[in-house]
Length: 169
Image 1: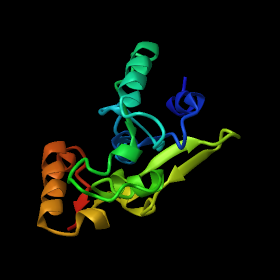
Image 2: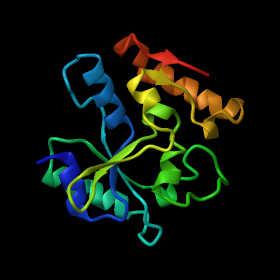
Image 3: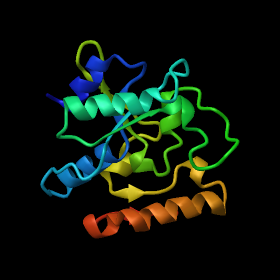
């Protein structure tokens, strides 16, 4: 079963596939590399009414039902303090995705009721499809934010995997 169909069947408020699994898949296809899931399946949704431990329970359920995938489930209603304390709460899933660290990672995809593919791309897809990696505006604010961006670029080793990638700061 298609990952997007699995997510759609969960009927989560604003549920979407997001972040690294989309970025890596797009870059692999554009680089003519074999399409291999190198990262978690990032399932995100936005529901302030659900308790925080719902994520872990759903992750466990999905791992049992679909063990082929390594699931990472995040209710973005609670993720505003992930990198820094005392940050304003996100207003929506799109707002949360706009705060992912780099532009090619700031993307989500879901199937609507008609099973049409829809994207959540607060900064568009140009950087993603043109192998450009830059911090999103929220991570360009100061040195503390830029350090997180730079650390991710080094740790993820994207430049080794995708030689066409350009890092812009």
